[in-house]
Length: 164
Image (cartoon, rainbow, N blue to C red):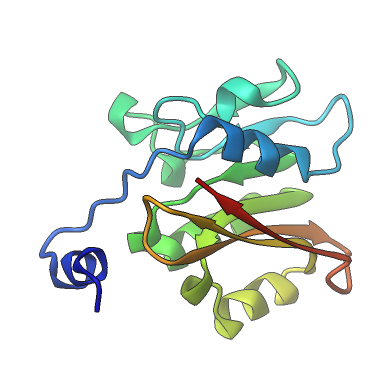
């Protein structure tokens, strides 16, 4: 096991702050099919890697460091695009499904995109529209960008990219 993997597995407190590189966030955003009047939501804004690059001014955000907790959000976003906190993915995904956006897209570790989690989205009427596998060298393991969309029946596009 690598030193990074060992450090992550043996930590006693979760660290969910992994800032998405700007170029990767932009590539992620560009994967989403959107309408000009869509309301975009960044569930965990932090430095704004996603939020500041959304293709609209019709956007909102949550950020726990600013006392804007995603789990308290009551808006009606059309699109949620984020890099969610991995230590609470189940709760995060259930809140996303409760908010019922037309599109949910996230950056997630390959091992975290489980059959059970995919089934939750399927049961809520979502399919996987796009899936991109990538490696961010300063992070642990391979990752996916997954685009869930309401009414989509299957994966329509698959891509693989390495980020340095």
